[in-house]
Image (cartoon, rainbow, N blue to C red; front, side, top):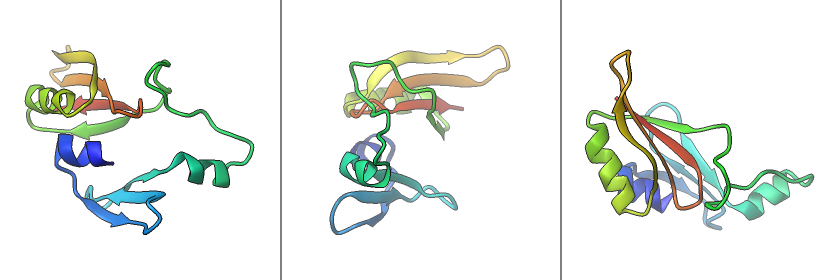
Length: 110
Protein backbone atom coordinates (compact mmCIF):
# COMPACT_ATOMS: atom_id res chain seq x y z
CA UNK A 1 0.00 0.00 0.00
CA UNK A 2 2.86 2.37 0.75
CA UNK A 3 4.06 1.83 -2.83
CA UNK A 4 0.69 2.94 -4.24
CA UNK A 5 0.77 6.06 -2.07
CA UNK A 6 4.33 6.96 -3.07
CA UNK A 7 4.21 5.93 -6.73
CA UNK A 8 0.72 7.08 -7.66
CA UNK A 9 -0.27 9.57 -4.96
CA UNK A 10 -3.32 7.52 -3.92
CA UNK A 11 -3.97 8.20 -0.24
CA UNK A 12 -5.14 5.74 2.39
CA UNK A 13 -8.78 6.00 3.37
CA UNK A 14 -8.66 3.27 6.03
CA UNK A 15 -5.94 1.32 7.82
CA UNK A 16 -6.96 -1.31 10.37
CA UNK A 17 -5.12 -0.94 13.67
CA UNK A 18 -3.55 -4.40 13.17
CA UNK A 19 -2.03 -3.34 9.85
CA UNK A 20 -3.48 -6.49 8.25
CA UNK A 21 -5.97 -4.61 6.06
CA UNK A 22 -6.02 -1.22 4.40
CA UNK A 23 -7.92 0.65 1.70
CA UNK A 24 -6.83 3.35 -0.70
CA UNK A 25 -9.13 6.19 -1.71
CA UNK A 26 -9.84 5.64 -5.40
CA UNK A 27 -13.21 7.35 -5.67
CA UNK A 28 -16.40 5.36 -5.31
CA UNK A 29 -14.60 2.00 -5.37
CA UNK A 30 -12.06 1.11 -2.68
CA UNK A 31 -8.75 -0.47 -3.63
CA UNK A 32 -8.03 -2.70 -0.65
CA UNK A 33 -5.01 -4.71 0.47
CA UNK A 34 -4.83 -7.54 2.98
CA UNK A 35 -1.79 -9.13 4.59
CA UNK A 36 -0.82 -12.70 3.73
CA UNK A 37 -1.68 -13.65 7.32
CA UNK A 38 -5.23 -12.37 6.82
CA UNK A 39 -5.40 -14.25 3.52
CA UNK A 40 -4.37 -17.46 5.25
CA UNK A 41 -7.00 -16.89 7.94
CA UNK A 42 -9.78 -16.18 5.41
CA UNK A 43 -8.74 -18.87 2.91
CA UNK A 44 -7.55 -21.84 4.99
CA UNK A 45 -7.26 -24.08 1.90
CA UNK A 46 -4.58 -21.70 0.60
CA UNK A 47 -4.19 -19.23 -2.23
CA UNK A 48 -1.64 -18.23 -4.87
CA UNK A 49 0.61 -15.57 -3.36
CA UNK A 50 2.19 -12.80 -5.40
CA UNK A 51 5.95 -13.16 -5.64
CA UNK A 52 8.40 -11.03 -7.58
CA UNK A 53 10.29 -14.08 -8.84
CA UNK A 54 7.23 -15.77 -10.33
CA UNK A 55 5.11 -14.90 -13.34
CA UNK A 56 2.36 -12.35 -12.65
CA UNK A 57 -1.07 -13.71 -11.80
CA UNK A 58 -3.79 -13.53 -14.44
CA UNK A 59 -5.37 -10.47 -12.86
CA UNK A 60 -4.26 -6.86 -12.77
CA UNK A 61 -4.94 -3.51 -11.20
CA UNK A 62 -5.55 -0.90 -13.91
CA UNK A 63 -4.95 2.75 -13.18
CA UNK A 64 -6.15 5.28 -15.76
CA UNK A 65 -3.75 8.23 -15.83
CA UNK A 66 -3.20 11.34 -17.97
CA UNK A 67 0.55 10.86 -18.55
CA UNK A 68 1.41 7.16 -18.72
CA UNK A 69 5.14 7.79 -19.31
CA UNK A 70 5.55 10.11 -16.31
CA UNK A 71 3.55 7.89 -13.94
CA UNK A 72 5.41 4.78 -15.16
CA UNK A 73 8.81 6.43 -14.54
CA UNK A 74 7.77 7.58 -11.06
CA UNK A 75 6.40 4.14 -10.15
CA UNK A 76 9.64 2.43 -11.24
CA UNK A 77 11.68 5.00 -9.31
CA UNK A 78 9.60 4.24 -6.19
CA UNK A 79 10.27 0.50 -6.37
CA UNK A 80 8.03 -0.85 -9.13
CA UNK A 81 9.43 -3.44 -11.54
CA UNK A 82 9.08 -2.44 -15.20
CA UNK A 83 7.56 -5.17 -17.38
CA UNK A 84 6.53 -3.26 -20.53
CA UNK A 85 7.36 0.37 -21.17
CA UNK A 86 4.61 2.72 -22.35
CA UNK A 87 3.44 1.93 -25.88
CA UNK A 88 0.66 3.40 -27.98
CA UNK A 89 -1.76 0.70 -29.07
CA UNK A 90 -3.41 0.64 -32.54
CA UNK A 91 -6.66 1.92 -30.98
CA UNK A 92 -4.85 5.03 -29.67
CA UNK A 93 -4.53 4.13 -26.00
CA UNK A 94 -1.12 4.26 -24.31
CA UNK A 95 -0.42 1.41 -21.87
CA UNK A 96 2.46 0.22 -19.71
CA UNK A 97 2.89 -2.68 -17.30
CA UNK A 98 4.80 -3.01 -14.05
CA UNK A 99 4.70 -4.95 -10.81
CA UNK A 100 4.54 -3.52 -7.33
CA UNK A 101 7.14 -4.59 -4.73
CA UNK A 102 4.92 -7.55 -3.80
CA UNK A 103 4.63 -8.74 -7.41
CA UNK A 104 1.10 -7.46 -8.14
CA UNK A 105 0.58 -6.72 -11.85
CA UNK A 106 -0.34 -3.10 -12.61
CA UNK A 107 -1.43 -1.68 -15.95
CA UNK A 108 -1.18 2.06 -16.50
CA UNK A 109 -3.55 3.22 -19.23
CA UNK A 110 -4.42 6.52 -20.85
